[in-house]
Image (tube, rainbow, N blue to C red; front, side, top):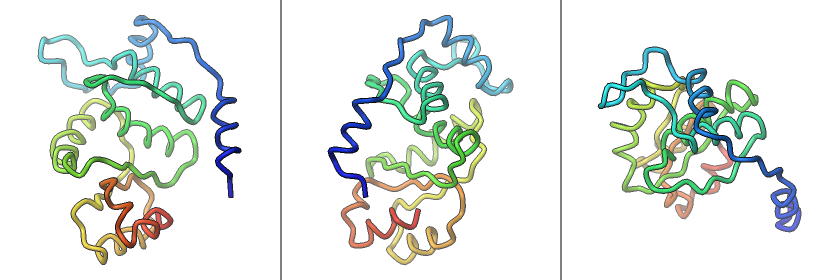
Length: 167
C-alpha cells in the first residue's frame, strides 16, 4: 500500500510542462476531434479549448495532469475523453468518474451525446447513479471494460468501498 508520504513525493516529482499556445491547441484539436463534428453555433468548426487540448495531451503523454480549469473551461469534455485515451493508449480497462449527484441527468442525457458527436469515445459507459445497492453490485460484478459513472456521495454508502474495488 502506498503511504501518503510516498504519494506526496510522487506528485512533487511530476514534471512541469510549459503551457502551449493557441496555435498548438488548434493543431492538436484537428488531429483528435471527429471529422464529422457539427460546427459551433456561429458556424466555425468545432475545436478544443487550449485547456482541453493541453489536458488530453498531457494525460496521453504523462498518464495524469493537474489542471486548474475555470468554470466553462471544458472539464466535462476532458472527463469524458480521458477514459478513451486511457483505454486506447494506456492499457486501462475500467475508469470511474465521480460527479455531483445533481449533474447525473445532465451528464447522461445531454453531455455524453454532445461529446460523442465531437470526440472519439470508443468505450461503453455504465451509470451507477440513482441505482439501488443490488443494481450497483450487479453492474460492477460483470467487470465489463468501460467508464463507470457514480455520484461522489456513493462513496459514503455502505457499499462505497466495494463499488470502488469492484471497478
